[in-house]
Image (cartoon, rainbow, N blue to C red):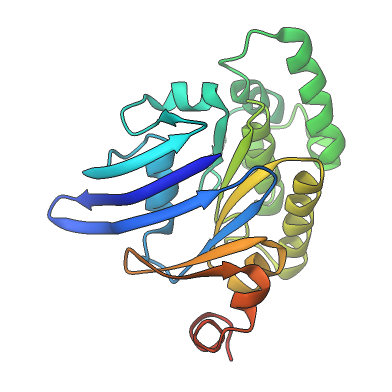
Length: 234
């Protein structure tokens, strides 16, 4: 479904990704774990077209993404919930969700998807007309995911969805991710909370200083001694 081959990304003279290759199959949860600064967010931003690679290939259902504009990538079926949520804090919950469907013209289906998002995130319904900047961090994260869902993606890209949240909210966010996957959504998730990410992932990759150093099933990496020592506190 999504195939990345030998991706090289630079910030000026500094190489952020070095020959990175990953794949995502339909219906999977694929996790990318690694320490802060490993290049995880750079990878998602490159997939989304926000950063141009120096070399390498990103194909989605056979279409090359590396030269495609970000809005056209969204049209194809990839949507990102960015690190730090990046909601429009001076706009209401309703307006943020409507912006998620900005590129769509199937208005009846948009209305159905809005209702689906509000059913999945009841707190967004409660705060539908509320300015989103007044909500808690957990509620804003739900809004960021809901906004991404409004574009009706085939692959949902989640960048650090648990960042800055209290433990009980982290559990709730990961429960939502699992439910989305059970409903058929393919998910690529980048996470510093390696334990949580590996628990829900079908497959996972370990990114260190811009290079993929390990890959396997989530269960395999949970018990891998190197992963346990470096990322799981053991």
